[in-house]
Length: 257
Ligand SMILES: NC(=O)C1=CN([C@@H]2O[C@H](COP(=O)(O)OP(=O)(O)OC[C@H]3O[C@@H](n4cnc5c(N)ncnc54)[C@H](O)[C@@H]3O)[C@@H](O)[C@H]2O)C=CC1
Ligand SMILES: CC(=O)C(C)=O
View (cartoon, rainbow, N blue to C red):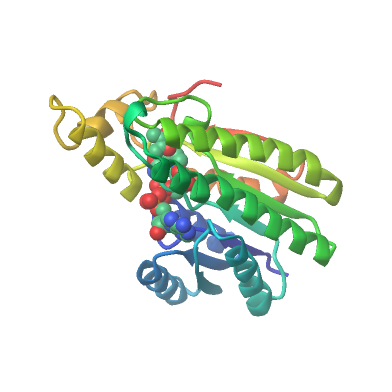
């Protein structure tokens, strides 16, 4: 029987690439996003491609919304096997200028979202009496802390920590919890980071921040969503059954851990 995966923040960017790969792998997929337009557009595209797909809008920072995402999977496809906590936001700001509002927002989405998603998924796996996999979006910024990305880096270190602790507590229920740590992928997130970094540096032109970060990649090219999707595809597969509590870097050679 086909397995069922939920991917948060999959209306666009890396989440969409991950959902496409899991659908190709034979998963029935539940797309989720806060942006209803891109969500509907992506769902239409998946249907045209012949994938079994459902969608649900919502905000990952809200605990109850994750119950709704799980219910969508169960109502449409009868079960849940994989939960990808992919949705995340960035904030670019000098350390001394980062506001309370920015801190609360980025932690609510990037950290609380992962906590609540893991809880909702694990409860469903336990109720089903099946094994399950939680896969979290971390980052190279979960291993290395970057200037101008202090708040963001802190959230990704927290995601790594939640991945470790959840994997320890949930192992007895046959639930694995891992994280993927992308490097520099050209999505809307990096378009925003580049634009913001330029604003804070008179010597920089649009595109320079992206060039500087991606120029340091050993393999000589920036990351595509497919590069990230390949790792998540593996982590979602039975081949990864014996891996848990890991935050695995996929960055073309940038951060060495
Ligand atoms: N792009 C990159 O180079 C890297 C990205 N990452 C992480 O990968 C994940 C995906 O990143 P990208 O695709 O690049 O970002 P993106 O900004 O291009 O796309 C994120 C998607 O999540 C959705 N979203 C935002 N807030 C949401 C919320 N509260 N609830 C539900 N959906 C929400 C957006 O509408 C969007 O469709 C994020 O967690 C990010 O931190 C990690 C390392 C590098
Ligand atoms: C955007 C991101 O995750 C970085 C810079 O690592």
